[in-house]
Amino acid sequence: MRRLLRDLRHGLEEAWDGLWRNPALSFLAAFSIGISIYILGVFLLLAFNLDRFVDSLGRDLQVQIYLKEGPPGGGAEALRKELASDPAVAAARFVSGEEAKRRFMETFPSLKDLAERIGGSPFPASFDLTLNEGYRSPQAIKRLAASYEKAPGVEEVRYDLGWVERLASIVVLVRRGGYGLGLLLGLTAVATVGAVVRLTVLARREEIDIMKLVGATAGFIRGPFLLAAAAQGLVGGCLAIGALRLTHRLIERSEIFAANPFLSLVVGQFLPRQALLGLAGAGFLLGLLAAALSLRRAGTF
Image (cartoon, rainbow, N blue to C red; front, side, top):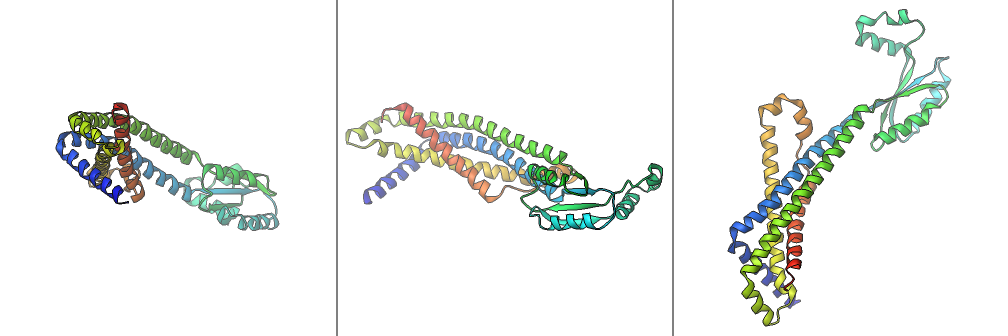
């Protein structure tokens, strides 16, 4: 245990010295990782806010079950009981034909004589359904509609998922675009950090050879390089988070943000703490991976 702590202390000291021995190269490595993490964070911020907007649409989304014409009472009451026991339904409000007609006339006063011109009863009774959390996805709503379409007394089940589905597909596209571009820039950062590690190894070649002669293990020699690269990645991730926060603040305080409600949808809320920790951790792992691959390619210790 004591030897392990001694080796760890040596690794940390050597990593610290290595970082300050070539500050320009250390900053270049951290900056390259920070750029890739920043771009990934921008796309995650967009996807996060669009996802919230889609969820809010889902909360406001209602399903209407229109009833067939017939004597009032039995059919509607049986359906009301069935809806009350359905775990997907948070509330089911009965709307009579007269109430539906009144709503229509209040919304479209210029068309108040439409019912007389059409004839019959164009305003059937219905149930307006509000759905519980967990049952608002397009798949869940389609399953709910299919289960009531053939119920006794039901004429039609209507819902509008068009906007929700389109926005959900945009969220998936934005998230995939962020992952793809982040991966591409991450590979560039890995190459940059790997080059910095190789340059550091070359600069310390004589010191490494002496350590090998006195019996130092490969892990003992590689440890400082891995720790230094991981620190560069963590710094890069923190720089990316800071730049992302600054960008968000600047957009929030801009006149364009106040005048354009769309911007409040796509960048209205900052990323949660878990996502920020994930970005910092991604930078840490990116630096560690770059150093490990570079040292493996060197193959001299």
